Amino acid sequence: MFDNDPRRNAAWQAAQQWRARAHQTPRGPLGGLKLIVTWLLFGLLLIVGTVLGLFFLLLGWAMLPIVRYRMKKRLEQIRAEQAKDAGGGFHYREARYQERRYSSEHELLEGDYEVRDDERKG
Image (cartoon, rainbow, N blue to C red; front, side, top):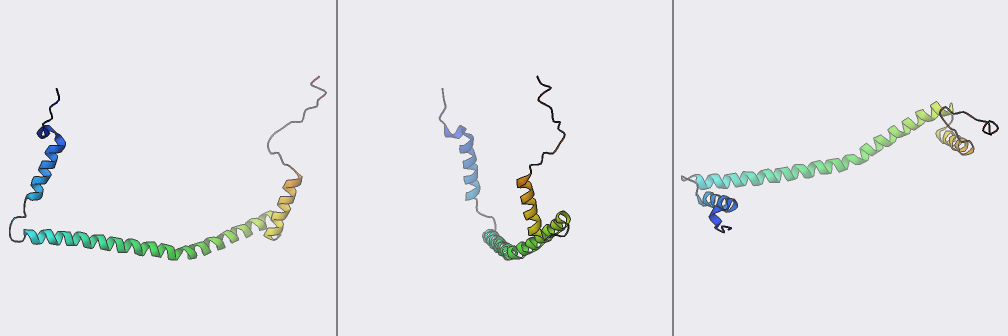
């Protein structure tokens, strides 16, 4: 029922074609030289790519403190502007303290709502 002949298997046929191509020697006196130069260029490209990758990795690591410093300064500037707008001239910490104290004492419900009397229900 099943034919176990490996020559009818597509993977086996593909492997045979690869093997035949691998055994073909480059033609002419410069064939081997072309093969060696190709491998050397490929290796050189791998080395150059690795060096460039490491360079950009180190450059990114070196820039992290600078970017962090700038983001920290920008965040401080934004907080100062928000404190100025919200507190009417208060220092940022004082404005935050007032805001926390107010929010803990009073719960604010936003939206439309209506207060109903319990007497109407009965």
